[in-house]
Length: 117
Image (cartoon, rainbow, N blue to C red; front, top):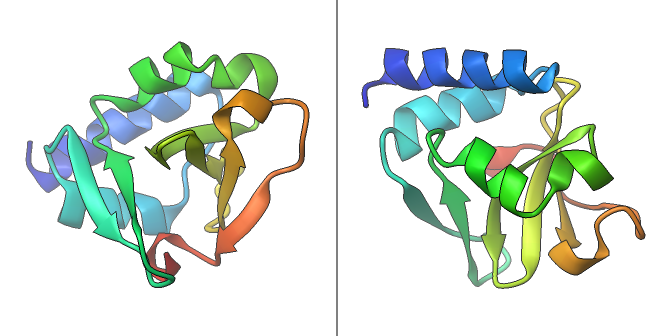
């Protein structure tokens, strides 16, 4: 999947979810993750997070019922039970939350953008 195909798929996801995905994430996804199903990102704070490719985003969000419990967020990856999320308001910040606590606890800000993880 090339950059234009990734951007097209992300636009479709925005339409499906009724939200806006950050421009930083769109750029990162189209230039770095590209057509990969999963991309392993080394975190600045050590460890890693597995980011989903755009073709996997809707399925993963449905699996964890993200839009049922956190309709303003998009699950973009995870490290074990810890999910990583973007706001569907076009904001760049990346958040995390235990996937078992969706809807029960507040999101934790992890970085100012995908590039800060």
